[in-house]
Image (cartoon, rainbow, N blue to C red; front, side, top):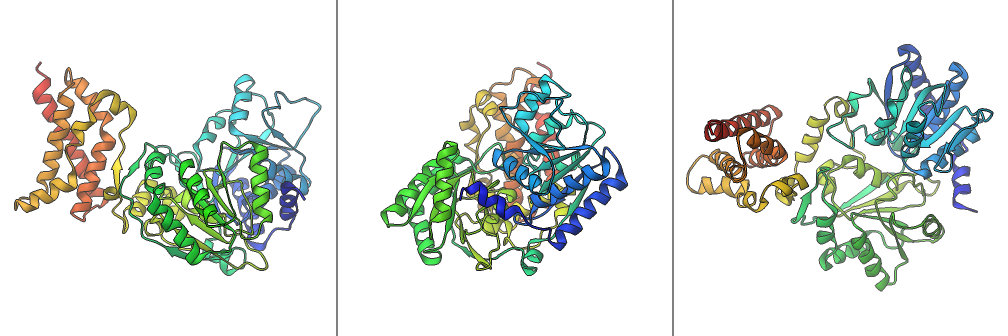
Length: 506
C-alpha cells in the first residue's frame, strides 16, 4: 500500500469527545464575535488539529454558506488536509503550482493552498478565490501567512498551532489574533489515552562554540562544528546503544554534514539507517520514508524536514542531536514520537542538546496564555532558567554590522571576564558595564563622521548591547525585566551623551 493511502486510512475516523467540544467552542466564538474576529487555537502535536479544523470547515460551510480557505506551508500538509476534507464530504481543491486560474464552472466549497503559491496568484488577481468567509491557517506560528491576510478583509481567521509563539519575535501573534483558545494539555491527552507518554534520557553536552544567529537560534554552521566532531558522534552512538537499540528511531540534526556523519557512524556498527534532508527529490524522499515505515528497528537521521507534515506512529525513539533555543521546534521534534498505537503507550526521548534543561520536560504544563499575551517575557524566562546560555554561546554578528564595523574591536571585550576582573581588583562589578560602554563608544568613533552617523551605527548595535547587558545580569544573578530595561535605557542614554559631547559641535 502506498504511504499516502495508509495516511488516508488513518485519517478516516470519528471525532474524539475533546475534539467535538473544541469544534463547538470555536464555532461558538466565531458566531458570537462576528466577522473581523481572529481566533488562535492551540493543541499539542498528535491531538488531531487537521481532523478538528477540517470538521470546523465542514460545519462553517453548512451554517454560513461561505467558502473556506485553508493555508499551509508544505505540500504534504495540503494533501493531508484535502484527503481529510474529502473523507467528510467537503468538495475541495488544492492550489498548487500547476493551478494558474480557477474556472467559474468549477465550484468548490473549500480551497487548500500553500502560502507562496497563493500569494503569487493573488498578486496577479486579488479576486482569485471569491466568497471566502473563513481563512484557516495551519501551523499559524509561521509568519509567512501574514502576506495573505491583506487580501481577505471582513472575514474570520482561525490560526491553529501546537505552540502559539511567533517564528519572528518582532511580529508577535497577539498583533493579529484577538484571542487564544487553549486546547487539551499534553499530560491530559496522555491520561485520556490519546497520546503516548515519554521516558526522557538526558546527557550533558558541552555547547561551547555555538553561536546565536539573527533568528535567535543557534546557527547551523556552529552546530555542525559542535555536533560533527568525533566525540559527539561517539556520545550519540553510546546514548542510542544504552537506551534505544532495536527501536524505530528518528534522529534530528541541525546540519546536513552532521546527519551524513551520523549515517556513516551507525552504518559502520551495522545498524539499519538512512539519511534524509530537504535536497532530496520527492521520489527519493518517498522511497526513504517508505523504507523507514516498513523496516523494523529502522533509524532515520534527518535535517529540518520531518518536524511538520510527517506522521509515522510507529516511531519509538526521538533523538534530539542538536541544541535549539526554539520551544516550538523542541515540541515539534518530540511530537513525532507521541502518536498512540494499541501496542505503543510509551516512547523514548534522548536529549543531546541540554534542551530539557532549557525548556523542561515535554509533558510539563505550559501557560500558553502567558506566552500569547507576553511572548518576550515568556521566552526570556524559558531561556534563562537553569541554563547559562549566554556563556555557552558566542554572539554572531549580523551582516550589516560586519559590513560597517571592525568586529574584532568589539571582541576585545568580554562582559563576564570584565566583571570578574573587577571583583578581583576589589572594585564594583558595575564598572564592567562602564567598560563595555567605553568599548562600544570607541568602536563607533573609529568610523562615525558626525553625531547622527554615530546614532545610526548605535542602532545597528542594539542586539549586541542587549547581549552584553544580559551577560551582566546573569553575572549578578539579577535579571528581572524591569532591571534589565533600566540598564538598557541607562546604557543607551549614556552612550548618546558621549557621542553628543564628542561629535555634535564638530
